[in-house]
Length: 250
Ligand SMILES: Nc1ncnc2c1ncn2[C@@H]1O[C@H](COP(=O)(O)OP(=O)(O)OP(=O)(O)O)[C@@H](O)[C@H]1O
Image 1 (tube, protein in one colour):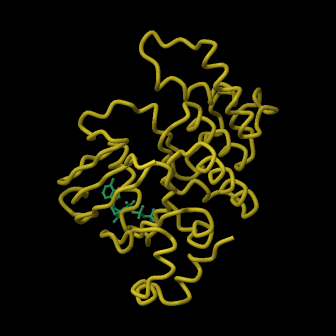
Image 2 (cartoon, rainbow, N blue to C red):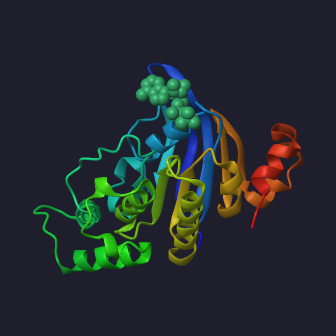
């Protein structure tokens, strides 16, 4: 498979005249699993905003799933799981089933009505995520780990070609976090869904992702984990200890 899931060329972006991303270029093949790392304020979330067209670049070109952004319309082919659970309203009046069904709306034209295919897609996704037994529960009453699983199911219910996640595990305990990572890994392998995952958890991402994008306003490193682990240049940048931490695989 060599279709490009994402292509970024000479991208510059920022806020109110100050540049945050400087001359960024990289491309992601379909089926890759890319961990996006870097220090606080290095532009990781800004990169995600650009990919999702929540922020316009000041210059450069971005193509998503083979289409230049200006003409991209297939939003249902992208699943998005935003940062953290701390902004989640615990009183949101919806059941697990309803939250996941909402994910089907992006693929529909008006009038937006749910049909048998939608019910089938929701059932199948719940089964895959192991959450069928809580389909009638209110989303706000679930534990953080289960709630994040439900929101992941909503992001996956259209079988997206690209799944974008911004620090999805920050509110999870270590055990729940590990099982969440395993789920994403299986999904990437079995469904060939391209994954972009922003995280500070470099020790864990090194176990699962195929590629690493290390940003510090510029691209410090982009390539496969094997290249990263064998790069003496990167030993100089991260120090031997830091590089080994990221390189710790199964
Ligand atoms: N809406 C905004 N308006 C102005 N400046 C912003 C805005 N969002 C982010 N910034 C600034 O852009 C820079 C990059 O922020 P960004 O959130 O992309 O970094 P990050 O790598 O995701 O950081 P973190 O690891 O802390 O989440 C920071 O200096 C931040 O203060």
